[in-house]
Image: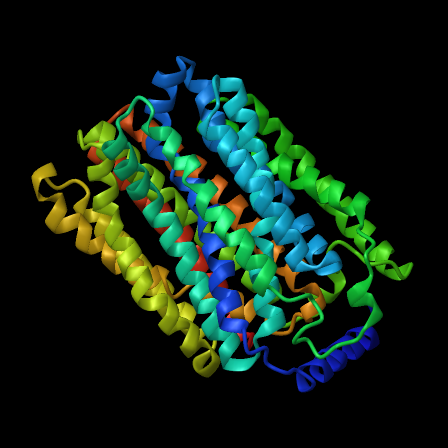
Length: 487
């Protein structure tokens, strides 16, 4: 896209903003949307504590059960951007309806699965359905909110992401402890059915069409065509990254060769999208426009690096506390829950502050997060009976910082994105987060296992947390660069 075209697009975005009329239902719509987002994000982590129970209940191998965890994340990451674009083109209410029906049906299939093959296939379908659902959150926020209200809305979104990630193991452990290890794991998935059915009714009654609240009548916003070749190229590019990383978590290194396919696939996707725009057709993701928007590229980098360090911490600590220390799944989850409380405290506050002080919110939050992580790395080698009084406060401090990263980064990254691209652009940010999560989990677990083979389990956990700290320092450097550029 030329400089003149970018200028015209920015001018049109400002004109749309001036015509914006707040939808009186916007906060209720957001609440419904975030309940659905919480449910789909929760299923990324809630299954971690159920792996031993599922393996015993279905009498299958560890490699097969690994795909119960990883298959969801893989399908989720591959479909995110396509789901966002479909919501932009065909209506977010429609995509939320389709995605939620698929999510409810596949959740029931997982919970009632008679064998391992069925549960893996159902988890793939569940992840793909979540990939259709989740991008509609950022799309609706872009559509329904402006100014400081948008920051507050993204603050609630960041709160949802942080709490869902941190409380998944706790909820999973509690349900299994309550209902028993033999069949209690099925409840982790079946509980989605009644919640999803209620949410489906609320979606049909409350979520507006895409043209409500935008103030825009641009024909391109209503263009129903979807860039299928672009979706295929991007899906393959994401697959070339996620599949090897997820396989590495399960101990298979050979698929890493697929990483070599990522650069040519990414290049082909960018070239195709540029060509699609030049031919006057709706792209999957207008990369030329997004490249010219203030803060978007840097925000994508900050988010991906943050999730690389952030997500792996929970996986390593969950494994270490259970296998290295001897805690039960519920005890391990309880010890990490202070992170969720810290994030719940600061995420809404950060959403309100970002409109006033901008990227400095991210700088302060990342610094606090890194301080908590450094303390956790120092204290993780303490005697097991003192971890409740040492590691838990460190996790709370890290959570206070973590709650101030996600929502401001979304707000600043999407500040200049037109509402017609809100779903796809927000989904691209979330795809970066999913790739970061997969890479971080593989990296930190590899460090933990490698150090654990020559040293004690606490020393291995410390090494993994220090690795996370290094990655978080890279996220801080990216945030500093964004701040200096005035993004």
